[in-house]
Image (cartoon, rainbow over all chains, first blue to last red; front, side, top):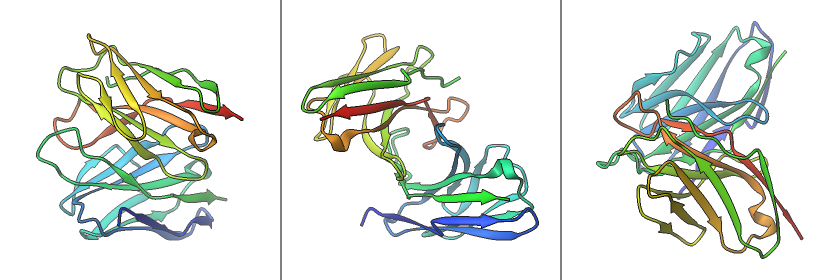
Length: 116
Length: 113
């Protein structure tokens, strides 16, 4: 099974709401990622978890809060978002291979977020 | 800076070869070149990666220039299902571990029947 699942597929929220995005994989991968993709732009890395620990935060505002409860699950908690945060949020996972720079990342289909 | 440049769009006829170029003049000596594609309404998917020599797999071929400052993704016979945005990707040079991808701007490939 090489699938990364993300829920929900679509999410509309107000600026005062609190919501969460979920991502799941069962490939035994120990690295998991959150990306943000604006329309007609490439994905941009937000967070990286390695062995359930946050290893990279690309200076993401604190209104985005990632969580990795176990090796298969990755959440992104959202609070007090702005309309400019509307985007496709992609989750990905990969092995933590011994050779740097060669592991394939497997992406989910994304959650399309609209902030009103 | 792990910067890549790609043409904004390209067009191909079905069943003809397609050559998608990427420039990465600041690539470090140990960084792999990755190619992913994103079909409409989907997340990116792996296509191929390489370091120095040319690489082939069932999806595509990757030709890497001898000085590694450019590469070309080759689809040998384009099909309608190959219409997608193709991204050339390098790893973030600020970090010496992990798969911290920096996506290029992408080339939107249209395949005409």
